[in-house]
Image (cartoon, rainbow, N blue to C red; front, side, top):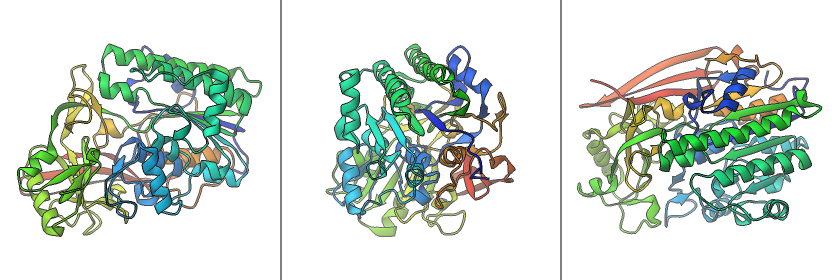
Length: 494
């Protein structure tokens, strides 16, 4: 099922739109994506992983596996084996390089689709407009695999700086970093179409657009400025589709359109470290780049990890007890006591949401969110920590339906045109699908399945609830052939 005897394609083109919510795809806002949905199969209930953050999701797209397998716990996380001086920030090339050195080249513990392609003698070219960490994580062993990764940030932000040299020599200087990212979108699309697809002709080409994610964060989900950038990136996708359609062997091309996560709007920002400090718990935010004087470290956003540095389980339980008493808390996770419950009273077990790993934190919190509409009428509204994005801006990372639901569309032989599939699927299915379309078996570490055959797997849906005192939380999960997809989670009504 996962390895067709006859390849369905000779070339695969993957287009990732960072942060794009499926409900933003309409004929008016995104005519090309809407047209593409009518020509291929749209997996409407596709899900990201938890945390629904870009660097975690990128690694899951690459490896076809959740964090419990690949070991990337967050956009930032404390990794004492790498450094005890600060929280690892996976947007930074220097932190990624340090992690690679300290782990002997196995920072990402699972095989990627790039690894499988290389073993089969096939090529992969990536055009990336996201952070250095994301460009790295989509093909963690790109240099060793003999592959090609271009980063819009420049030659210091990719394993293959010669890719940047090639592009700049042909297309001119890298574009300015303006917001919205109109120039970066156009530059990346041109590089993909005129250099990668037309000249390099790799077996798999992937372009990662940093929009609409960036504009969602800083220009708000429904603003006219953000809607204009959405139209702009959709037009870039249209030019890619037109190029494919014009090829004499267009029927041997497969196009996949995807996003890594969704977003919700923020209604207020909290100084969570300061609030905990007022309770006698001295902490450090990841952005401070130091752990000096802290009894715990914390990452932020609308969710984050807490690692206890001093005070052991007593400190952990005291912080958790305070969190449970606050209206700001949406969900709480800790190391597993059993399949469902964490060691900490009222918490869920981290493995329940595929976050159980030897690198796991002591606590994971999710700030409260719901399906209320924002100022532009878009459902999904929640709290964030201060210093991440402006109040009203978009955020992701948690388990709200609108954060987890992703875009996933495939136009290929065996995928019914215009069909909307409502069965369970997710970003962990992308890598095995790419490989399967080329007639290659997935890596043994891949948990997802080729979407060409996943419909034959019987799904099992379950809901769980736990809590303590006045705090209750729930999560809805679907299991399918060993793969787990979280439909949604949040604070439960009492």
